[in-house]
Amino acid sequence: MNYDQLGHEAVARIAAAGDLDALESLRVEFLGKQGSVSALLKTLGGLTPEERKETGPKIHGLRESVSDALAARKADLEAAEMEARLATETIDLTLPAPDTPKGSIHPVSQVMDELAEIFADLGFAVATGPEIEDDWHNFTALNMPESHPARAMHDTFYFPEQAGAEKRMLLRTHTSPVQVRTMLERGAPLRIIAPGRVYRSDSDATHTPMFHQVEGLVIDRDIHLGHLKWTLETFLKAFFERDDIVLRLRPSYFPFTEPSVEVDVGFALETGPDGKARRVLGGSGDAPGHAWMELLGSGMVNARVIEFAGLDPSEWQGFAFGVGVDRLAMLKYGMDDLRAFFDGDVRWLRHYGFSAFDQPTLSGGVGARP
Ligand code: DAH
Image (cartoon, rainbow, N blue to C red; front, side, top):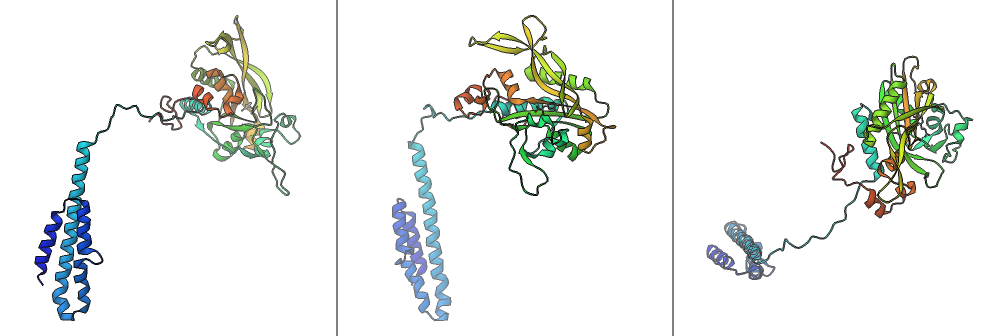
């Protein structure tokens, strides 16, 4: 049998196939189960070894040229089909695209980013601690021993007592335990802020069982109240984007600071675009038409806390402060109900949320600065 002849004829018919259907029929005719080339391959089994040596390569060669020709013609026909579609089909680019819903940054996340950015400029790193805390870090190490009345003021969510457990677990009531944890972990000197969620069993228009605080801590040699006041003033002016922020420091009491100061900020009542009165920060609270508003707690870190945190208070001192993040957001962006922060109402988020593209954020939003 003339296998070359057979091959040429097959390849010629394949090359002439007019479309993919015709090509498929040819494939079945040659290589299908009952195909002519398949039939030839089957005859190899009945040959003597010598005959097979002679005929085998020819039949395999035939099969190879047929399948090569099929593949080549298939590629040509498909390319031609694509060409034809490109030449005839059109897309109307002027049609309006369907609107894709866009997410936005929650004001609390936005404010935490702003805080991290402002304090980074002042050389503060961001520190974190667990929200499920133990009573030693949340209270004892902050100079609130077991029977201390300040513990009762915190409306703590406790976990059930574990038999034999040394420490009672709770949801942290403030970010202050991060002070202790960071001193224990990193030693001194330190400059950190610790933003995060805190929990208290309390709920009304200005209290939610979960809210946010940011703690600040500086530990170094020769730190005094002047450093605290300058830092808070610089921070608040940058945060509220006003140079006329005026602070008043009032003596106060916190177990973990000594002396303790409460910081007030001057404000005036102004009528907003909605006709409602809003507090606008700026100016002395003693100026006509102004008043003072309590904003945050702070003080020089109590020597007992420094000791609990494993440092020598005769060598290291520092200051600390704690402030509500939600409160800062409400004051800066004019929101009036704290509960709306956590209702998950998308209309509220759309109104107050921040675009991931417009607002450069430190913690790596889409608009993060390089
Ligand atoms: N931890 C206090 C609270 O939650 C706030 C506070 C006051 C933090 C004074 C401080 C501070 O670091 O020095 O009420």
